[in-house]
View 1 (cartoon, helix red, strand yellow):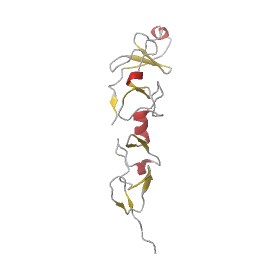
View 2 (view 1 turned 180 degrees about the vertical axis):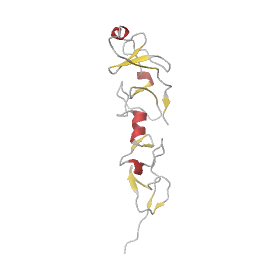
View 3 (view 1 turned 60 degrees about the vertical axis):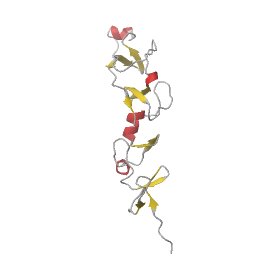
View 4 (view 1 turned 45 degrees about the vertical axis):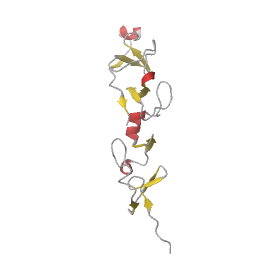
Length: 150
């Protein structure tokens, strides 16, 4: 007769004697130990997928909130490191250096008024003439301070 071999939990290091265990990122987990690094939701309870980046384990909502749909900068397409500061506009995520006016290429910084039109960013000075004349709707906002990703 074979002996029961216990799996070790990657989260707490303890033996997994539970009826159910989770397997994610090439490791076994107690269902209570596989949690989102941001919101602490138990990932086994909220869905069948989890995301990882730079050692963080994330639920879908927090991954998209931190890294956008693709995990890449909306301007340059390069990956955004988990420790990187970012700016956001209309659900898009940008490296700080890429958050620039489409016309003058000046960097937009926290507190600057900007306009986001058809996927492009414009500073207050370079907003399209049609916008000034009232022929174009703008999504105006003041960006928040850049978020420090954990």
